[in-house]
Image 1 (cartoon, rainbow, N blue to C red):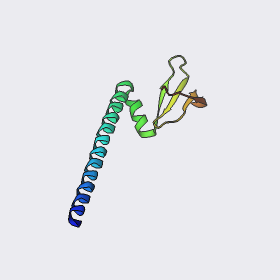
Image 2 (image 1 turned 30 degrees about the horizontal axis):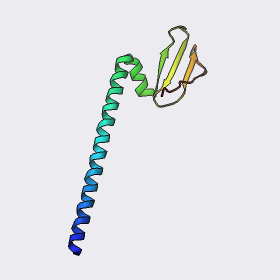
Image 3 (image 1 turned 45 degrees about the vertical axis):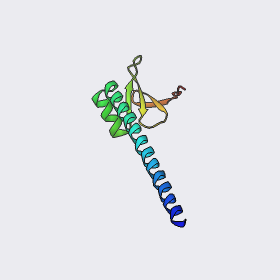
Image 4 (image 1 turned 90 degrees about the vertical axis):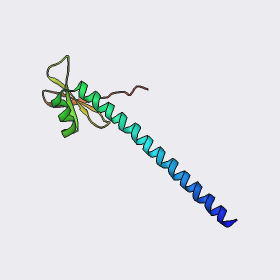
Length: 99
């Protein structure tokens, strides 16, 4: 009887580990796909120099369409967007997430 319990415990642990492994791999594949799609979108929207700036410096400067002296400095990571005029910081622009 004790051997049967040991076998059942080993089977249960093995199945649990396999299920956990499947979940981790499946989550990683979805995350990788999301990262790949985000990267493709950035390549489509940003110029080569803007994309390089984003990767190397952690932000990208986007010129204002209405004011040639204004630039919006958008961080790579979540954070506040800087408004810069004539190369100098003026204020922060807050972007509200849509839900």
